[in-house]
Length: 586
Image (tube, rainbow, N blue to C red; front, top):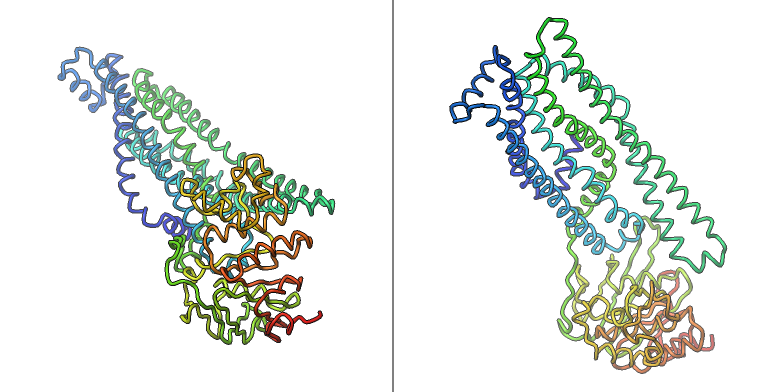
């Protein structure tokens, strides 16, 4: 329990300071409950002459209304009761709305914090995470925590304050009756929780696990649509999603069953109490006239307390059900705290800093965590403005690691990385504002061609003339002319409505639109046919001298016009020189 509250308060963060004022509001609204229910006894007693005998408090209330000018105190009390309950209804609605607004605002903050953290996490941490886990955390865990823990905890606090006020009032009228009801409830609820408490926690954890498996199955099954269909393995992913869905449904069914029980337990306990009071009063010879006001008061209180008790029990269940989600959110936020930063880096304005002149690696080493040998060792590269270098090597030679290091995703563990003669340091952001990265598989949003070229720029701020200029230099004018809506044509998810070569040229146009001076092409043409590759190469050749290129390629002919070619082998540069010197007749 102690760890539960520690995690709860940690996730709320600085907003915990708002909680005391909310609790005070809950208390004010509960006073209206107290006023309305407290007048029920005197009100009913005033309807029957002599019913208030023996109860000085009720007689005093009646006298107070007579002194206020009401010839019949029942009229005054009835009006006050109505006003109290109507005001209580309006206030309860407002309080509920306040709770939801607070919770939804916190949900938005949580999602933003996690999204920012995932976007700014170190690259080696990103490599250890599954996309489905991050989607689950932002989309589902935060919602489960907010609705299941935060909303319920605040609602239960409001209900608990009101329940305590009402029980205190009833105790002043009939201590024995209140003790009887409480005793009955304690026994019933204790037996209920002894049976279900561990089952609810397990159900919550299993629902989250199966939900994550559903997301993973859909992502993988639909993400590799062509490969999956060609291999004929649709059934594999279908079964994966179906089994996870069945598991989710099974555990959710059990949880919903546990949630239904409290309502009927509370109803049965209240009916048992009322019947018991009547039978005991009859056996003791107490007249119905004396018992009726008390029963009326307990009856109205029961109308208020039964749903409150049911809601509180269901709220506890939901909080236990959502415990696993809260633990996952807590773990992610703790990881954010360990990283020391979570905010999304702001894009630097174009042209910030001096223009690119030179990029240098001097004796750089890098070893992946847990690896027994370095992925890169003693790497030294010199790249000047307007020149092109090529990098070749077999699979596993270290080409991808080298590119990740050049991009600043991986920090060198030894050696220097210099931009314009100055160390890159811990913040590669200024360097990345000069760089464009074009991999073999291009990322395109399910948006218009125009928006994809100007990726990251709000639609209202896109420079249409610059888009046309970038498309022209990337040799996409003819493609645009053939599209039904031109640059406003939607390209589909990951650019599925474009060919492979067209997607590569869109990426090149994107680099030009954002005025990137250094363009890194990582196996960008490896999956293209020779004719399409020549078209891409022609677009690149037209930019030589104006842009600086780093090109990785298996197809050696792609590097024919590079100024320098480096050959990597087992993480080391084993050859460097002109294309003729390194590649020769191979």
